[in-house]
Image (cartoon, rainbow, N blue to C red; front, side, top):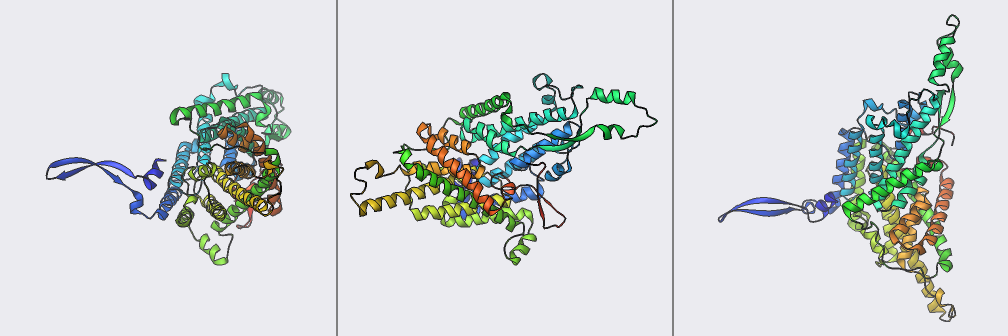
Amino acid sequence: EFVRESLYGDGITFPLLVHSLGGEELMMYSLKMNDLFPVALIPAIGGLGVGILLKFGGDMPPGLRDTVREVDLDAIRASKASPPQDLLACTKNVPPLSERNDFARFSRKALAATATLGTGNSLGPEGPSVEAGMSLSRLIMNNEIFGKLAWVFGTLEDKNMTEVQRVNRKLARDRLLLACGAAAGVSAGFNAPLSGVFFALEIVQNALTSIDISVSNVTIEDETQYWSEMDYSTASDNSFEAKLTHAETIGGEALAFQQINISAILLASVISALTIQLLLGSELALRLGTFDFKNPLMELPLYLLLGAMSGVVAAIFSSVAQFSKGVFDGEEGPEFVQQAFQSLPKAAQPVIASLICGFVSIYIPQVLFFGYETLNGLFLNSNMATKDLFILLIAKLTTTAISASSGLVGGTFAPSLFLGGVLGAGFHNIVSDALQSVLNTYPDFLKDYPYLQSISGLPAFAMVGAASVLSALFRAPLTASLLLFECTRNYDVILPLMASAGVASLTGDIVEKWLDEEQRESDPVSWGDLATRINGENENEDVLCDVSER
């Protein structure tokens, strides 16, 4: 917020000592960056900052799904088990905890997010907020003092436990802490604790997969007894391992499998919301004006149709992001474009994306991220022409997809709400104009049914559209519905929201499977960052990251 206000607002104010005939005088001087740079170039400042961090700062932690992979790898290593080769490949063989500085990695990504969002690039703050919560969880789970709290979590070194039991306990504990951090991040970002809980149970849970590893299924005491009774004249060095090592699947339990897990996630989300209310007040990020649903039952087909349209928009959004990533990797587009991007340094990609955002903002300034002002305007019944709404939809979709695939750091939670809100507003205008045209042409039509002569206001459809695109993009209909419900405090909205969000999520699945069976696995939009890919035997061949049979 400070960076954005400094660049686009009143600038930076600082005292300046001025010498005059009357003596020295202390004056306040304001430096406005938009007086020094064209507004269209300000996003490029953020892109340049991210590029410098990528070039000289070192690596950064990945997005949600690959963060789960790193946590799983750390848990297996901490349990002194052998991690599978697929998991090592998925995490790019990230160094052990003792050989890396996670605090520095997390700080670099936080700075990159500040540079991206503070300069107005077309991404959202909730992704960094979730990653901040997960980063804090990782710092805690890997802390030696925390690891010694055996009286709370149970020791991981119990001699009566088998190796698979030790790995499972460590894995379950770390995954729970990660889910708590993610829930706290969403709760703080939207001041919506219930949405934080369901974010963990829907979206984080979807990133948790089972892992196949080779383990010994004996206890330490069994191993000691085995060697004490062994005839060393006939035993080979690996006889014990050969007899007792086998493949085992770990990490298959859902977060909600144990009641205490839900309690922990709920507690983390509530404390996060209370803390943010204490520091920043109780004002909601999304502000919805007064509105009512005139006849939700009769309008239900409209909400279902809006949900289906939202699913298509989410699938297009994901496809454009995939194509944009291919262009940046030099794998898509005309041959001269591929050659140009193949020779381009990775650190230059965020600069190109931010320049595109700045150029588009000359004509459509709403594509830049300035909080939720534009979306709140739709919710507060700000009238925009239908044509302008769909132009804004296309522009925001394109700039967000390019930003997400270029290396700029930010989330897609806020952009998905924006896209849905704009879609819902445009859909309302089309239906309302069509209905009014019918009534003007046939004035006696529906005369006996006055409740069918008009539909609910634009804010209602904008709100349902926002929840629907979010639901389709993240496959989280409950999270999306509860988020908008918490922002309205109106129970009447929950039924249209859930119906539309459910259809949107289903439609998104169908469309993406029709477009590309593997697209969901490598979707850069839903998982926060571009999914991990490793090179196959051919350097141009992509191998999807998968560590288990799903």
